[in-house]
Every structure is written in C-alpha cells, then in structure tokens.
Image (cartoon, rainbow, N blue to C red; front, side, top):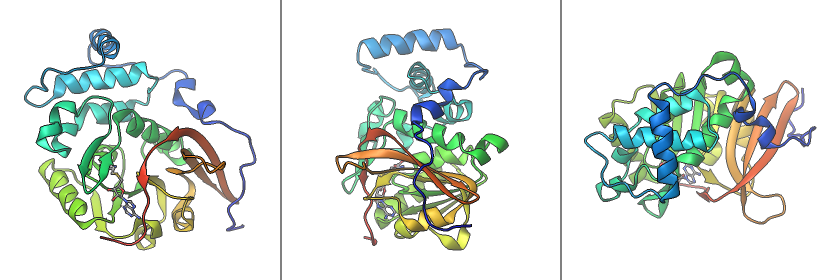
Length: 271
Ligand code: SAH
C-alpha cells in the first residue's frame, strides 16, 4: 500500500458523479407541486421574501424547492436543509436574507456559504463509497465551523462530527448557536484545521469551507479507506478556486476537480 497521493487514473468529471444522474430517487414529500411552482416564481422575480414567519418553515421549504429545481436530489441533504433554521445562525438583521441563495457575512471577514453550494458539497460527500453503502456520512471532519450552520446540517446525517475553527470568536459563537438549536453529536475545536485532528480520526467524510493552495496532506492521511473529502482548492491552472473531490482507495487516492467556486482562504494558525 502506498501513502503517496496519486494523480487521478480516470479523466472523470463531477458532472458524471452528480446524483442527478442516478435514477430511482424518491421525490419531494411535502406538497411538492406547490413549493416547486412558488420556487420557480421566486427564481423568475429574483426572490424578495417579505418576511420569514415565526420559524421560517415556509420560506425554508421554498428554498429547498429551488434547490430541487437546480438539480439537487439527495433526500437526506434536502430534508436537513428543510429543517435547520439558517436564519438562527446569522445576525438578526440578515435573517430576512437567510433563505436566498446568497452567501452572508458572519463577522471577522468570514461568510456563510450560499445554500446551493452547501447542498452541492454535501451531495457529493454522499456519493462517496462508504456514505452510499451506509446511507449516512459516518464520522465527519469539518474544517471551518464558521457560524455552525453547515455543522448543524451535517449533524442530521452523520454519526459524529469533529469541526475545527481557527477564529476563537466564531468558534464560541458556533457553540452557542448549536447549543441553542440543541444539536448533538458535535465536537467543536478551536484550532488550525490545516492539521486536521488525527487524535479522533480516521474520518469517513471530510469537508472544508475554506480553500488553500492545495489539499493539506493531513486531511488525506486522516481520510478512511472508502471515505471521501470535498474541499475548495486552487485550480491547477493557478486561476481561481475549484471544488475538489478526493476518494481514498485501498492503494492510494483518486482526485477529481470540479466547478469554479469562491471560498474564504484557508489560513494557518489561530486568532
Ligand atoms: N460552514 C461555515 C462557513 C464558514 S466560512 C458556516 O456554515 O458558517 C469558512 C471558515 O473557515 C471561516 O470561519 C474561517 O475562519 C475558517 N478557516 C479558515 N482557515 C481555517 C483553518 N486553517 N482551520 C479552521 N478554520 C479555518
């Protein structure tokens, strides 16, 4: 068995991996026709929600319906995103925008990723060998806890999560958000996620919300055989960032680069 990362053996594309391509998935459960029609209308008129209601359930269903229209069809991801109150993880002044497909500031120059990007990344994680076989993401390492929104979504589809944030103020805020929402099974750490967290590894799924020059070796080493990693990294032509999917095989790693993205930088050290 070699520990050296290998170049991909197949010129595969992420489109080929998309669950949209896999047939036989169940459809929406909650009055799908109405939500799809409203979501399509939202999309045509550039969504200006007039209010989010008491708990945001209605506007959240419409966000999920728009995600379906965009081709997300991984049921556990859609179910989680229909349940987790995104507006509770951002500043109350921004709550009205929480269900638009937009990234939002969470303080200290950081942003929460837009819902369609969160959904796409989680969907790709679900297509990893282990997740496909078990129906959940298993033991998860998340780098870049931020406000804790994605952590809360992950918690509904994982056995256990280790989530690392380098900014102490955000780490503490995320802990508060997750406590308020009574999210269980999450171990938050304040530290440099570039090192991963070997003590609690290996991980079935690794996901990063910050992008560096390349995928850190520590993450590759801490990924279990059969596990999958999804993270942004610099494009091979040096221009901008792309999403990268890495599968750990018995005898190495298979890496595939996908669509262009814009994530906050992966920085070393803590603040
Ligand atoms: N998923 C988050 C998105 C946060 S933005 C959410 O739902 O809010 C990405 C986060 O990655 C930022 O908070 C940033 O501080 C953090 N980050 C950047 N480099 C890091 C590192 N080396 N280790 C841990 N966190 C890091």
